[in-house]
Length: 290
Ligand code: 6GU
Image 1 (cartoon, protein in one colour):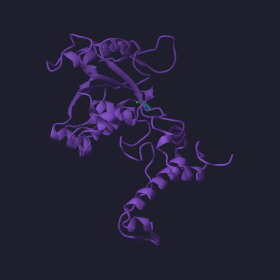
Image 2 (tube, helix red, strand yellow; image 1 turned 90 degrees about the horizontal axis):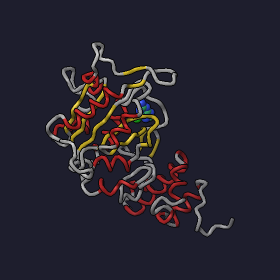
Image 3 (cartoon, rainbow, N blue to C red; image 1 turned 120 degrees about the vertical axis):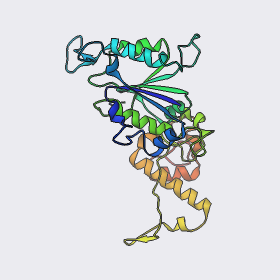
Image 4 (cartoon, rainbow, N blue to C red; image 1 turned 60 degrees about the vertical axis):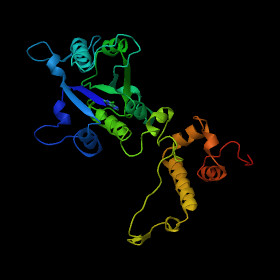
């Protein structure tokens, strides 16, 4: 997959003299080393036309902060998309070019499903905004040529999109074909809400507790079922714990499962319903007296 990142802080991703940045280490670094990811960093200021390399201006209508200029972003995107000889503008509207991702706190939530969809793309282009955002005509204009997603990584405000790009790339990267056994699952995942991969019985649930050696540590024992060798009992226990944890810390995800994301409540067996009822979520269809 080819990944272009346009930013006023290319050094943030720093894959230069000072050593590997976030794109050079761990999972992403390995994918890049294998050639599964081809990163191109672009300094937005390259497309600024004045001596000061200005990329922002005051907002029309007043208000605090600065807005990034449409003319600078427009030529930057045009050049990155078409100006490198590898990929040219589509001759037909259906020709796949690239997906443009604009990280912004006012975007739609980034989910596991989006990560899976991105992992199936040939090319992603990230447009990192700073200040109060990018002039809104830039996204409107880009939409006439390509798929554009404005995405948020959570309900808080970052100073810029660079960290969000790292978050998104890490989620995408572990789903790329070639990364252990993800070949078939990544593409099926696009309708999944919440967490967990397609085909995972724990899909939509948070992971419960995990343990390794030693069996006893500071007087705390590993739950005996995990030492029992009874794989069915272990799987059941893990599911119970996942249900309990999800009910405790993400009741919204339990509500989603119950009230019918595809396959929702149907995925719950009798034991699931008992565990959820104990955790304060009586599930309809259960033989409980109300
Ligand atoms: Cl994607 N960008 C910025 N600047 N802030 C955010 C965000 C993205 N997601 C949550 N907050």
